[in-house]
Image 1 (cartoon, helix red, strand yellow):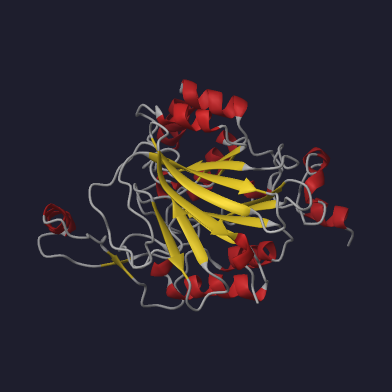
Image 2 (tube, rainbow, N blue to C red):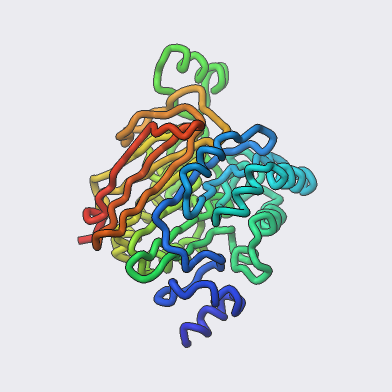
Length: 370
C-alpha cells in the first residue's frame, strides 16, 4: 500500500492531506490546518467553566503562543441531556475571549470527564456517542475526520518541518475507561477531606489503585493506535493527557490508578524508542511538576496545569512532585529552542495575571532510550 493510499484508508480528504507537507514522513492521523507551522511556544490549560468569567485569556494572548492545547473540562456539561450539552458549548463559543482565541491561535483539544459528560465518567456513560458528535462539531473536525468514528476522540498531530517536528499525542481517557475503585470514609469523604484540609494535611482523593489488572484507562483499540503513534518519527513529543501521568498517589483519577496501563505506557515508550517525550496534564485544579527516574525509558516529566477558572481547596499528596503546588488559576507554556540538535525545552506555569510561578528546564538530550 502506498503512503497516499494508506492515508486515504484513514478516511482523510485530499484537502486535509494538502495542509500537512511537514508530516510526510509519518502517517497522518488527524487533519489540522496548521500542521506545516513550526512551533516554538505552546500554551496549554484545562478546567474552564463556561458560565464563569475567564480573564486569564488576556495573559495567554500576551504570551503569544503558536498553539493552544485544551486538556479537557473545556466545558462542564455534567448532563445526560444533549440539549443541555449543546447549550453549554454555545455559551463557551459566545465568549469574546474564546472567539478571539479561535480567530488568532491554532488549537487542538481533548476532553476529560466534564465535557465527556459527567463527573469522573467512564466507558459506561450512556451518551458518549452524542457527546463525541458534539465535541467534534464544536472543535471543527471535518466530516471525514477519524475522530468522528473512532472508539474515542483520541488524536495525534505532527507540526513543523523535518528537524523541528513536534508530535502532539492526545489520548482519550474516558471512552473505554473501566469503573474506578472508591474508598469508604466514616462520615463520608467530604467531611473527612474538610477536616484533613483544615488541619493542614496533604489530602488525597477518594479513589484507590485498581486491584484488577484487566482494568484499563484507554482500552485495546486505543492501545493499538497509541503504539503506532509512538513509532512515528518526531523531534519532540508532547503527550497531552487529560489526567496526570506520573503523580503517585493523589487519590484522584490518574494513570497510576490503572497500574498495568501505567506500566504498559512506559514499556511502549521504551520498545518504540519514542525519544524526547514530555507529558502535560490537567484535571487537578492546581499546577505542579512531577518527575519519575526509576524503571523508566529515560527521566519522565509531567507538567500539570489546571485550572483556567477552577482552584482546588486542598493539596493532595504526590511522591513524585518536584515543584511547588500552585493552587490558583493558571496556564502552562512550553518554550522550544531549536538551536541545537536536541532542543532545549523550558516549561512554565503562569498565573491569571501572567506572572511566572513555576519554571522547569528539561534537557531533551537526556530523554533518549538507550
